[in-house]
Length: 79
Image (cartoon, rainbow, N blue to C red; front, side, top):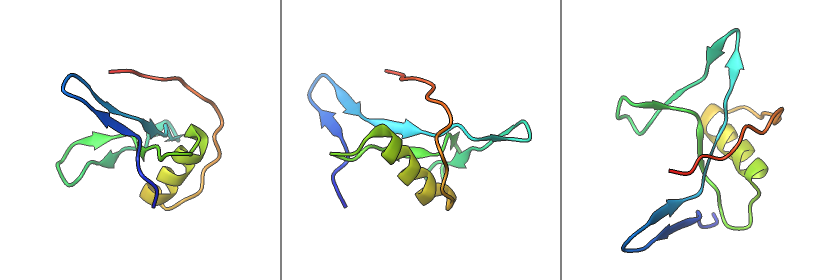
């Protein structure tokens, strides 16, 4: 397994993460986050040398157990 893209300094904590927005029959697919009771979009960290498209497809396969095609790129969110 390759290393995820994460950079931590005294002032910043950067994590490069992708998510998939999956809608079927007007329902949005969410997954439980680490048995915490919190829900989030399925996804995960981008690994070194990976494109965002490859990363989101890999993460969706890992979390949902199904291969998906990317139909639309929605954007980037920086927090």
